[in-house]
Length: 470
Image (cartoon, rainbow, N blue to C red; front, side, top):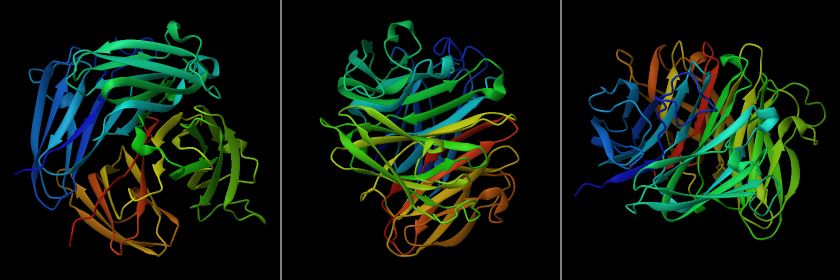
């Protein structure tokens, strides 16, 4: 009997712009779905698209090789198979798979990625939400999918301004089975919330969701930023969170670490930064690691912003960070931005629990060494021993071969591979990367992508999975 693994996630295909008006009322959004097989056997992947009424609007299916990758660029699906529009989607397979979704709007000037989820829940949390932040430049949309057969499902949104333990705004909508709904936080009905904070959505049946935020100062595509991250369920909250990549003024990149206290009393939260930059300047007599702490009230949101760090974190820093809460469970989103004159960029990703879910095997469904998109693979060895890490690159590009490399990473240390300057993959490569610590050390991975000619970036956390038996 075949095993079926279903990844339920919100997929935004903004080919008509009505859903995102007025935040991004220009240009065309396109979407790519990338899937990696994490098993040593071939299989079949299917994707079903659902419209705003929950109707099956079309589907695609294809084979996938053992440990192989499958890229579906949705605009390439013929219109007679899937009409242009806004959809939710379900990815299913008869082998274990990992999946990511990429969003791009080159006319507007934004892009990012987020993970699919195999675990929809009745309550989801969004740790970072904007409404007219910095004079209206940043605004968020929370896209929520009813993954159940309840038709329709009543879903309630609660918005919490930073530091607030009670919601500033609430809203309830009905969502058809399998369909999605866009809570546009810039709408006037949410005017008691802001300029930033957190949100929850609640229902009597499981939900999936993604937060999409856009910075648009109205000065052209080069100054627009789009970030996205997957909504959080209960399995992603805990007292110890690990972040594989944060910055402080590195190549003009800076990071904000945004934390929600999910508990009923306040908690003290401590951050510790560990350097991965071998050429870090200005360390002086304080070589790190560096720490800072804040107090976060019950059910409220707080932030560490690296340029405001008061404990000596030097400019030029990039590396990892660990977050520890004294009393209550927390959720963490990292948002990183850069604002050079050549073009603003930004990304967001979810913090990972420091627990048994961090395994020795990690799937990265899409990486690039192209003349357009380029990838940095940021690896954190969470183990107590030096990790021997084998990286298999599985090509989806015609005429480009697969490749393999092995590196060593010290115990508890980060390491980075920038694919364009690494000789492992040929120019033109795109596809998946499969990472395995051959001596069993747990790994946490962040995939950071940039496209300089368009002034956009994207990133996501690699998907940990249980290593197969030898």
